[in-house]
Image (cartoon, rainbow, N blue to C red; front, side, top):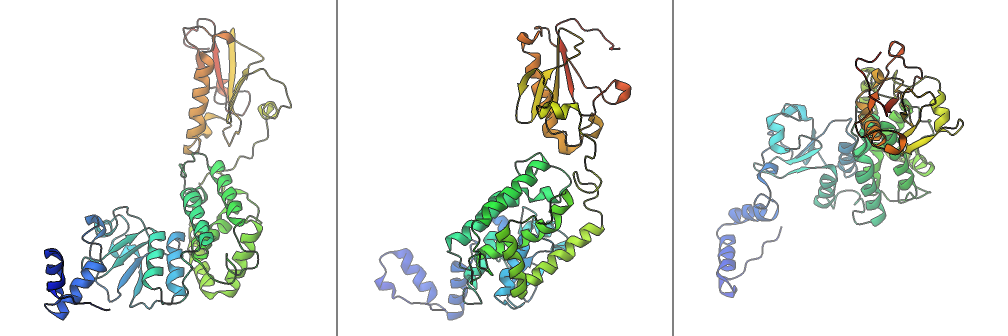
Length: 411
């Protein structure tokens, strides 16, 4: 550390002269002020990111658990740079009472991990894995590999992962939607796989790292999530050959040649296996027992165009067509194109909130269409649920009936 002293007479303003005089008072105080001013953001940051961590001998505490893929990218940086525990100590949030404890929330009001906390009183707290990793790459630039923090292809891989995959990765392990912008697990799973194919185009074909011979930040950002993908996607019926070819080759090769990636793979996998043993996926829609094993119905053939119908409205998710056995001058059926387990309304779950809303919206549009025979006085919208209710086709459907006066109660 170098501290330059300037005579007060050379200063062009009273403020700068005052600062210079402070630095000349005492060497110890000067060192303290220098560290305070230039290695802390306490004067420029919201108060919630500034708080003292639990007492420890390490300079920083990295709050994380083995199963966290976002935390694992930080651990890759720490391990590859061989940062001693006196610099960065990996600590479970449980030591502060958990993610929602007042002690942890004082460090990170988001109540999430990972979190890097400087252990000096009033030290810096950095949430979010990308910010943590970039700070570590900068702060410990002279330790181990650089991770090529300014390489555009590496950063693009990390960016695509963080913007398009991270927000929806919960579709592989969370009990119910939403998954980012998706309220449908099937669609989220499909989008996740599509984004992997985008990243695949950026991977060097020779390896062992995503850019070739030298490790980069893209490796650290992508690798832990691929552990999730390989372990979880098969539970949803996705083939074991689920990774695009370049990503698969890179994943296998980097585990083989780099002991840090092999270590992180074991850390994450061990935790995922415990999730599995505890039955985490047993009640998750489309995994475990919650799959649609029912045979196709006449509605599936109508949707496929194998049986003709008189369509009155069609969207990406919903099909509306005239009932061939109408009970009123206007009688239209409204069905989801993808049954997704909805044989009847009793099969509905939080997974189906989006499509159920779309079905009702479509029914409302149909009921307003006077060209179909509906009057201005409204329509009856019916869901027959099960044999006792008169349901004939085990594929959820709404009857929109109108064009005459209805009576109550129905028969």
